[in-house]
Length: 113
Length: 110
Image (cartoon, rainbow over all chains, first blue to last red; front, side, top):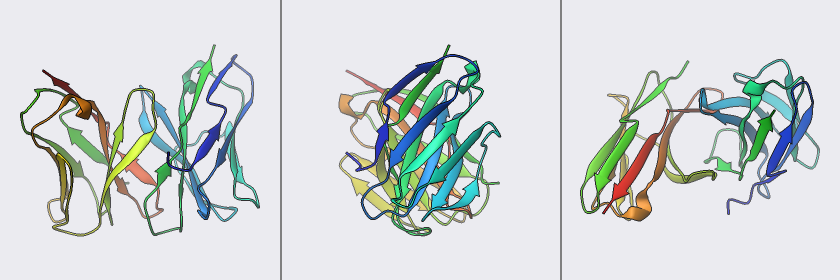
């Protein structure tokens, strides 16, 4: 157990819908990262937050957005869902911006029907 | 943009044999990571390699880093079934996000 928690574990929804994925980092970790894992694209970095501020963006679609709250938990919002958005979404956290390794949560498996 | 390539992508090996997974990366990365993933599960951190010539070992796995060649290797010694999993290497770009290779699916057979 990495100490990173993610909810829900599974999510099944329909095209065009909107969902929110939640992540709580390890105690004391200030940095949160979101990754998407799919058969087509592999593991891709989406977005990073550090202490409430967005620090880096990867291959994140405009339909996707995220935020990190004052208690450091983070939410990833996915809207106008398409079949191709079906994937495993991981959150990872690290203690500082530059130091340390990233610890991954259990992931949320999103299925869009 | 940092690109990471692993080979092989699929590896079937017999128990007791040795093998090496290779990870090449395209531009400077200040560290190199190895992760293990079991089917449907999360990524488990195996090694973080910080400097040229770094070598780390845990059980039957040993990882090394050659920053001049932009190459990391994960060596498996005397494989056992429990090592069957997908192994990812990842470099870290200037923004601190991880760039992953496609992963090596390892199957260890009796």
